[in-house]
Length: 371
View 1 (cartoon, rainbow, N blue to C red):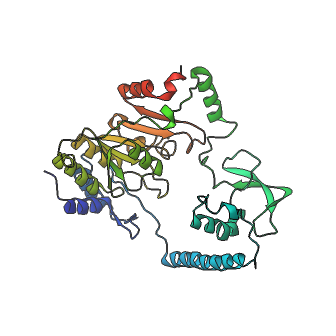
View 2: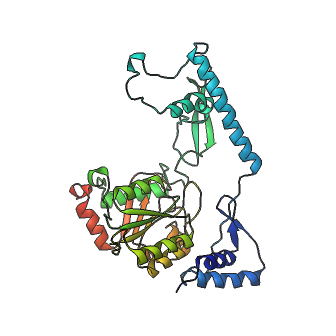
View 3: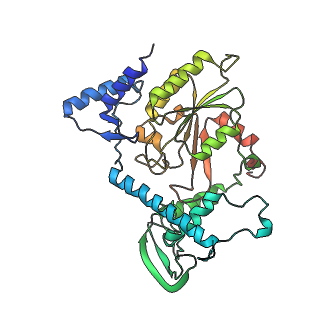
């Protein structure tokens, strides 16, 4: 029998040396060395199923209350002035620069949602000079910008003809520098392409190949990316959401799924798939993979790991979250990654057992072209 959720929660957090912050993330707490070793042992036995012998510690800086309040106040003030300016535009006091439907088209479905259009013309335009900046070099760690100016509050821009050199790149996925046009990565990619070639790599009808069907259960982390959520919905499977990186929440769903089975019929689920990411791009948190694998093995479920942001960025050799924790990749049933994030390139991959890959190859749209 397993421990109660409350007891397990206390053990895990005490052993971790961390406690939840107000925003749901965790804060680091420092202890003496002998206490740390004792906590490590508890964490190893109680939380990881003896898969991982080191404590997993994350720390996140909380947003100061003053900064949060001022940010919301700023948006509130901008919204109020936005409605005031819309009133002035309605009465022709102020000119409206944004594209609008003609009067004879008012009966058609609007092209944009009302608030989206409001945000664009009243808030985004005020800071538009910070976005969509044209560049004139490779988007590496730094790049060169084409200088521009505006005389009408960012509704239109004029190029000055000058170039701003060596600007730090904070707006591109090439954050590891793999997408440079020279260097070891470029040379290696060219050699592999010449040797093995490339395929169309587009999945069946551009909508993917569903691995699950009706009668299957997907347990999805609440902070999973929208693409994972959409794919899960398209499969037709039942979806249940567990709290972000909360192993007690995940285990409760797994236990309930085993005990109660499918709704109404109470038949066993055909498959139970745990759906997680390696690094959650918006939060920066790392999946507690050793514990997830321990639960997956305990309840005989399947594991789908999205390494879109962790591949290339984690591990001694950049092989992702599995290498980061020193685990066996065979414990992950479906490992998905993309080259568009860490590698700053295009395309992606699916890794798994040979029978899984053979199934995807024979059922996917790309099988016609990838010879």
